[in-house]
Length: 266
Ligand SMILES: Cc1cc2nc3c(=O)[nH]c(=O)nc-3n(C[C@H](O)[C@H](O)[C@H](O)COP(=O)(O)O)c2cc1C
Image (cartoon, rainbow, N blue to C red; front, top):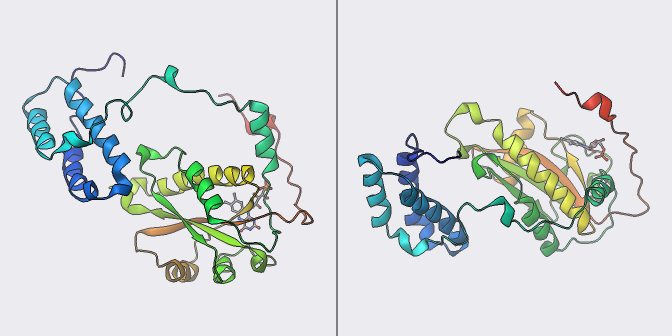
């Protein structure tokens, strides 16, 4: 908000600090999550520096400081910054449109392994996608072993090519990221946004993909729970077939609807 109010976030700062105290205890020992800890600590430190405190926020600030948070603060790199400081990408609209047109659902792949470091690069790119409250309530489960065909056959929609898929990626949503039922659809929005980024990143890395629908059928849900060892709060969002595209494989031509039908200024 501009100008910033002198005191804000009072509805949820108590809950945030309670969660932070748990995180600083657990994740403070996890080197893999050090950057996230630095981020949330720095944002909270800046919050307490900025607001005009009252009794409630002063008590919370004390708890925050007593948790030994100061060692995780980095006010240079982990707090809000100006839009003008962002380094602009060199990618033009035409280049981006070209990439979007290059990506077409591909179902025929070369019988070659897909290097994991390349898949990881695509996942890293996908993790830049937006998600509600930056909760990133999903995981990319990558299957590149002998069980690919069996897992690729659990959803419908792969008949005829499930035996030709080198890698299956299952995007699994985690409903434990939310407090309220009203947010149960968010895993699908966030998971889909990240999946799109993933598929586009694959194209830049010489790989291709086909999204695979996840049907809401109880027996298939149970089969996937077992195959991926899912927790009760984890749900499949969608799957993707991934591999090096077979240049001799056909791609169904998919005409896209015209702008005039798809866009309406209200
Ligand atoms: C959510 C979703 C589910 C899909 N499910 C399947 C599927 O089960 N099997 C399949 O072969 N293709 C599937 N597709 C691919 C679509 O058929 C394809 O995206 C569409 O025909 C447009 O073609 P394009 O991706 O080449 O632009 C799916 C696509 C999406 C986005």
